[in-house]
Length: 325
Image (cartoon, rainbow, N blue to C red):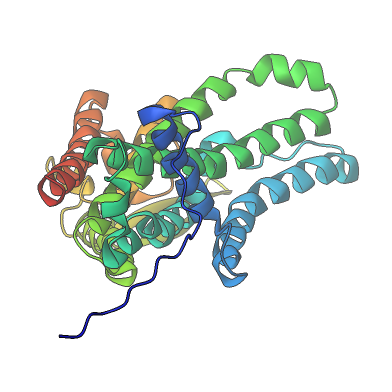
């Protein structure tokens, strides 16, 4: 009989003797990793381009408003009525929705496709810790994108005013308003994309589903309620005085019927903007769908928002409960 020869190698493995920080440290590491993933930190240059472009797109309207406010009064002597905090979210809402649809799946899909998620759970993390950590990471990033433009706009409009202190005294209430409206927007733009990403390991599929959801629901509400508006101006002379009257007609299928405001809620992507308008008490909206929703009691709009956020939130939590049970 022949005997096999074996060799022993000392690879320097040692028992860990450092501090054991437990579950809280694991949660923090997961949260920080999620934020770094959103900004493409620790990866190649291509991963950082999209966040930079989205951030620039969000900041551009605020900077343009400030430039207009700072220059027009000096040029024409009269302050120009420019869009303010109540209009800012409506203007950048499309950018925020696209940002969430493209970036949020980065937090969930690669972990399941590569099997890294099982390594997370080897530690003292639970599936709830994982879901909450990823959700909070993107929620914080969303708030950064949402609030930065509003803060810059507030500072710029205050400094460009003839009397900055007087402007701040007259408009200080806009601060709690845009903070509250920003929370509403961030919760939805965080929950729905992550819920979609929990059902696939491909980021492209999750992004396509979320973008399709925004587009299809917005188109359906626009056709049924908004339609295509046409303004007709008529001029007539009475007693030597020329009088011009204008009327707006719409070819919407539902027109101004009682069911039209409820159908307008189908535009899921505009749901947080509806609440934002209510927070700012904005009445003069040029969008036909927005005007229809404004006819509803605030409680109806809030309950609808809770449904379209709560259901995806439950699906996200339940999906990982089943996957990691």
